[in-house]
Image 1 (cartoon, rainbow, N blue to C red):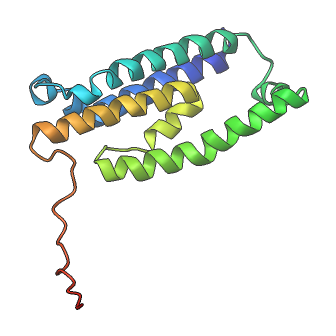
Image 2: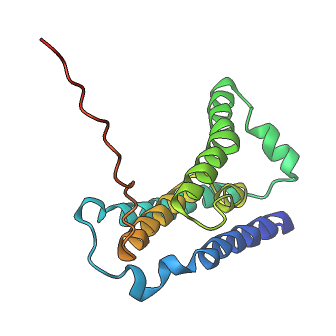
Length: 165
């Protein structure tokens, strides 16, 4: 293992731990251990399994030693198929993921929602997206357990319109 892989692996673990510690209220046993909503009982399971699969499938090829990060980046664009896939990945990872996690995470009340973008730079996009979804589900359950439910408040209805005729 190269020093670079050791540093990236360590940073991936640290950002994941930081996300859990910053949102530790979501993992307190008494807070969200109540009855699970039936509509979302498979969401945390699927999200955590997807995070595990993303880590396993992405970690194996990236453990190959590369001379430098520059060479690794150049290799991503070796042919047209790799270039097209990598451009999609780059736009999703560098534009859409931060926009989605930061805006949606703030709305939902997650602490430091930007950490999922930072985490994706050291782990994988699949891992950080799946982990974000698992955290969102925990947040929804947390809100329901404290009586918020995450539902918007009542909307004031307009006065009825009278028609003549």
